[in-house]
Amino acid sequence: MAPEPVEPTTDLQRGENRRIEQLCLLLLAGLPAMAATNLFPGRGLVLLMIAAGWCLAGATWLLSRRGRHELAKQILLVALFVILSLAMWFDQGPYNGAMLGYAAILVMAALLAKPRVLLVLLVLMVLVQGLFNYAAVAGWQSFDAKPLGLRRFVNIAVLLGLVAATAWLLANDLRRALLRLDQENQRVRQSQASLSHLAQHDALTGLPNRLLLQDRLEQALNQARRHQCQVALLYLDLDNFKTVNDSLGHAAGDSLLEAVARRLGEAVREIDTVSRQGGDEFLIVLGDIGGAEDAAQVARKILASLAQPVQVEGVEVVTSCSIGIALYPQDGSSFAELSQHADTAMYQAKESGRRAFRFFDAQMNANLLQQLQLDAGLRTALRQGEFILHYQPIVELASGRLQGAEVLIRWQHPEQGLISPERFIPVAERSGLIVEIGEWVLGEACRQLGAWLQQGLPRFVLAINLSPVQFRRGNLDLLVQTALQRAHLPAECLELELTETVLLHDSADFAELLERLKGLGVRLAIDDFGTGYSNLAYLQRFRVDKLKIDRSFVREVQDKHSARTIVTAIIGMAHSLGLTTTAEGIEDPATAGLLAELGCEQGQGYLFARPLNAADFADYARANLGVPD
Ligand SMILES: Nc1nc2c(ncn2[C@@H]2O[C@@H]3COP(=O)(O)O[C@H]4[C@@H](O)[C@H](n5cnc6c(=O)[nH]c(N)nc65)O[C@@H]4COP(=O)(O)O[C@H]3[C@H]2O)c(=O)[nH]1
Image (cartoon, rainbow, N blue to C red; front, side, top):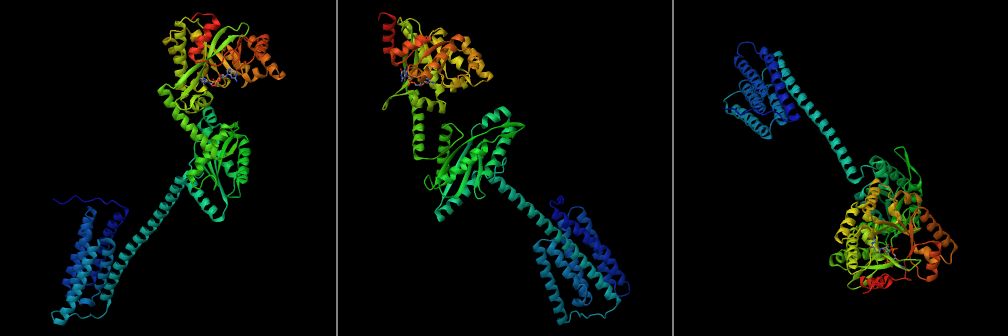
């Protein structure tokens, strides 16, 4: 069975196949013209060969139409060669005009057929010509050129026409293929250029990305090494990007980033590189600078430029950023070192209150390392039970009678001894571990109070410090409820101390959480009152029970008029809102007396007792409340 014709797959192949058919048609038209010039006696053989050629051209055309292109090509080329060779053998040999056809066959084979077909045809042609010469020398056949005349002219003209048409068609194909190739090349070059742009630039802002920046920084460093100058790497992070993104949406966030990118570009020189690292972080390379002051000047310029309001989706947004700066050579000599140090400095700028810039110094690294070690240590401490609770009595100022205790955590470190919460709570807040630590504090404090009640101590209130991070989890009410249930305690035994900043999270979720906590029956107190925003609106909005007057005011209440005015105002305000007050950090009887006079109900401080461990606190409570051992 004949194999299924194979469909052409490429434009080039399709073009070649069309040419084969066109060549067949040319032969079908040209050969009758040649036959016409041979219509006289004695030309029977020539006419026969022309007729054979014509039939073959027709058959080849049919084959090609049916999809057998390769076979058609080979038959056409070989048949033409055979016909022309026979024509020459019987008529004039190499003097026959058919010799021109050889050239045409070779051109066709070179352009249309496989290389081996071209080679075979060439070898055959040489052999045939050799044979003619041998035949002439050996006397087998004599080849004489016929006199010139009209017939010869027509034959030559037809042959030349065929050769020219073939060459023209094929050369045209070649030209078109070259043109297409050129266009294709241009397209490839363009897509390569846009691919490499994409690979090196940020899609949103069009700024160089980290990869390109790294390259530029390395170039700047090489130049600085040659010219003995400095390079600065600035790490910039927007301060309020998340707020804009969350409140105005991602499109607004994107517009803000684009506007920031434009302003950063305007704030630096042409030779500097501004890049976006992703999110709201940008890196800037300042090459060839004289020293730190040059970098500081650029940082100031950037801070001032970003302080100008930006129009985002029709809303005026004011943004700011924190910048960390690392310098070559003093802070590092590679991208990795400089970017890490600039990042560390940026965090220091953020810690210092944002909208600021900081230069890296080695101490920052030491602090960072210490914090990382502390963070790892805290996890171990939680696993191995190294935390303990101390309890500081809270007394009624008028009578000195114990009313409750503030629960204060300590870390009983196996090597470093007792570590203050002021050292590790901020680290735990940053890492999020405060959530687990806070849960442990709640459970342990309730367990301890339950144990004291069982030992015969009268019921009193435990005040527990809560971190803002714990509120963000949203399940605080469940944790409180579980801790109370496990220790069989009524909710009135617990007072939760929040900071003012917690209350500024004025979201619906937060308000619901506070309501659920109030619903349980626990009391809410505001710790360190007076140091934060002291906004009366939130005191009314959230049902708070108590204000704890910060010890910075208590310390100065006797000597400083301003402190006394503030304390008086806080107490007055609390009373008018139906809240009670506790003064923190009372260290002497005179202060305690004055605070009682001003109307403060409760006090806590070294005057009454330092924070005590569980056993010492139980002794203190028994003595204070007159409970026998
Ligand atoms: N100079 C002076 N200081 C006094 C006096 N009376 C009490 N203090 C100290 O004042 C701090 C009162 O705790 P705070 O303001 O809530 O401040 C606490 C609180 O914010 C935080 N903290 C302590 N325990 C926890 C906890 O379990 N969870 C959370 N989230 N934070 C805690 O650590 C802070 C520091 O705790 P402490 O080092 O125990 O420091 C305690 C206490 O030892 C006094 O008369 N004079």
